[in-house]
Image (cartoon, rainbow, N blue to C red):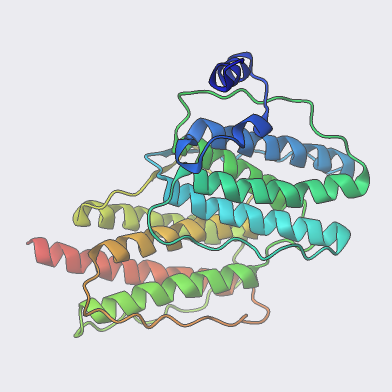
Length: 316
């Protein structure tokens, strides 16, 4: 009998995408190369939908990701699923299954792959509705692909989806994500440093744009990278190679989601049993403008600066 592993080897060597063959691989055996191919397949399908909708191709954000871990990729994959799910509902009014949740404990590339498989089903529901044939492009599995490559590819899909949604991610959606991130930091600081006086809320600045909010949250990410160095807890490196011009609220949501997941990870690593978990679900905040998101983003930066200063005091 022809060995299945030999068959899979030929599949990868020839660059033929046969996800059905991978169905026989256990979750523990799935590698970043498999996840990258699945992300590329989703992008190929989304691109066909974009062409069918008569939408222009979007310019990629000039960023570089390194040192990403599966947990960080998983969080962005959840965002991809959420956008694919919304696109399916936009076109078909199909509400679909219960969305995947954040997984506790160690996250494997196989966990990311499962989320992307479910996202592909939601993307295909749009293709099927409009009678769009499956993409003929067969992604090649590259054994050297890392979680960082997968993260970049998922970010590319997320950016494409941002501009295809009938009801794109709004400043209100981003506002709630920033509030969730602020709540994480406030609770942590007050638990870890009981005598700390939290920063004062900044003034409201009108006429801000999504680009301004994105650049503001870049400042928070730079601070968080310094915090990771002070705590000795590694997070991904996120470099911006060029100045950013066109930004949507969906792009801001992706960046704030990264901040949220990284802060959560660092806090879980350094939390002690006596720290209380007091996070509460934040209700939809109502209609918000980019200026409201900018104001809260500046406050988040202030909180992260306080955290960094406290860590530096401890080291000194």
